[in-house]
Length: 133
Image (cartoon, rainbow, N blue to C red):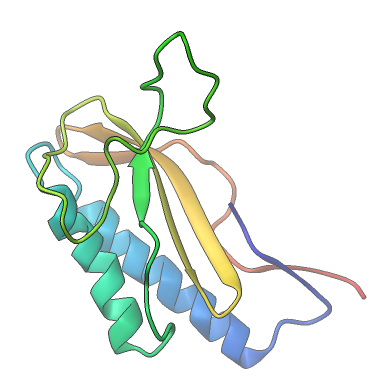
């Protein structure tokens, strides 16, 4: 997921996107096998709220991909999600979709948990895109 604005982005939009990317990068750096999902969530949720980028953060900050029973046609699976209350631990090989949003902007990445950290599967540049008006 990448955000796009029509016309030139404002300084505020660029700043928000920069903050979201930096916050998510700190989250990714902590995502190793054995890390607790609630702790990973806090690395994103708390800085976003502290910076005043959102008045509240009621949604999740990520979830697992690829865990679907053959009897369903879901596009995602929320059995393993990232919220403050989650106690499950990351395992090597887990595929996750991690996302953050604030001020009408959002960024997400598909990642795989590896022994030394996450591998980002998304290859699209991490920035705020703009198109001519």
